[in-house]
Length: 402
Image 1 (cartoon, rainbow, N blue to C red):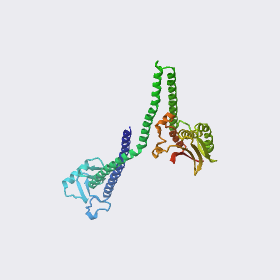
Image 2 (cartoon, rainbow, N blue to C red):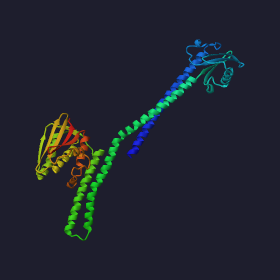
Image 3 (cartoon, rainbow, N blue to C red):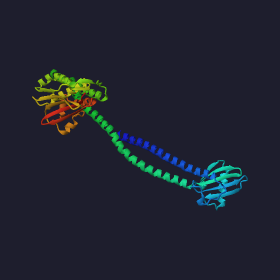
């Protein structure tokens, strides 16, 4: 699909470029032809206003006339009365008479004799008719040269734009390709995560139907089915929440709020959880921290960070929550002792379904919590990241202050 999209992008781009080149070169040729034709018509008008019986020598030709020409006068009987020319050979009388005959037989006042490369203009006088002929060989040569130049420049421009279009297509399609790959990876990971509990549920259901097991074993099979069902429900709810955040379906009502108070209130439900796990929960929260955002979603971010700290902190460890103002931002930091996180894992930890320890899925960890938090923080115009130093893992959330 990406390859077809890239080719389609290049084709559309080249069609636009081709049309633009054709329009530009067409306008250049059109205006050049009109300019040359206007120059030729001015020459004929200048000659028409002159004395047709005058025989011009090269040095005596009117200054406005720069083209080879000749002018003839014909009486009412059709006989040639006078012929004069400038920059033109009039020795071939047969050819001149044939040219005059062709021009006289046309019903137009102005026209072209393509076979002789001449443009003519007729004017009726009391004595008969005057016809001026101007050579257009240089005009045609100029147009042919211009057409060749346009074709040459057009081919070079087309080739350059084609190369640039391929490079531009790669750059423009890259976000689409990344999103497509992420979507495919998301579907594959979700299928994999759902496959394991489904397999366990199906296996235990089949064993539950078997008459070869007693009541004790049946209770164990039912408990396993219930456990896996809860795990699947948690995974599906996480997937739905992530989809709602991504699609904007999770309506975020932004309003000014006291960020310090939100963090303080969010710590209260976790105190018994930390107490049961024999962990210490400490906090350092500055007063007057205000941000603009969705209270419920920012609380969800805090819950995710506190839940992760509770799950993966070393036994009897101390989890510290800090909230302070840093320049024009409010900074939340949740620090907990635990296994060091590598630089590679720190880069990928916010990706969907990414888990440092694959066994964490048995602890109801699906690798989606931090991804959900990342999406929420980005919707608030903030930034979330993690650092690991000296056995202390710290997750930071930076939000614009108001």
